[in-house]
Image (cartoon, rainbow, N blue to C red; front, side):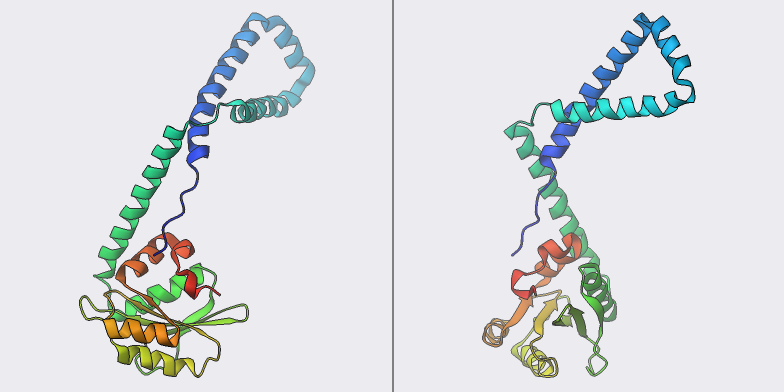
Length: 223
């Protein structure tokens, strides 16, 4: 099962130090300006309206220097930031799982279609030839994707549903076939999915993908 990618730990810790360094630089700049206020006044008059350009540039330069010269974060800070982001990801997945219980099967299909478009699959829509209205077709480049949506609080996906998706795939040669369910798979369905090259996504997989995006999409279902 895919795990969320943790990024930004170093940037966050470095940013905290950079803010203090920038504040110290601004205080020193203000102090220097006060001590040499006569020279600053002359320079201010000499620059004219250009001081409104020069001053922001100096402030920006001080910020860049603070970021570049700030000490690197410690391993403990990096680990704390990583743990914080993992906790946020787990909370987002739990919230998504709870929200899925409240949607109808038709709403689940629309949610899957919208999430596929979010992840770069163009023209994700319900296959008009599918009588159940639960088969989503999507394309990206030269690849095609079929996602059979199964929404039920407790009922598992059975082998017959895998066979139905394999039959629908015959109309889309070379398409990747996925079954996305809000519940789970029967053991026989998992065996059939493995034998026929169908990618199973149980309720936890689906919640993780909806919450975290393409990074949580199964690698076996990536074109």
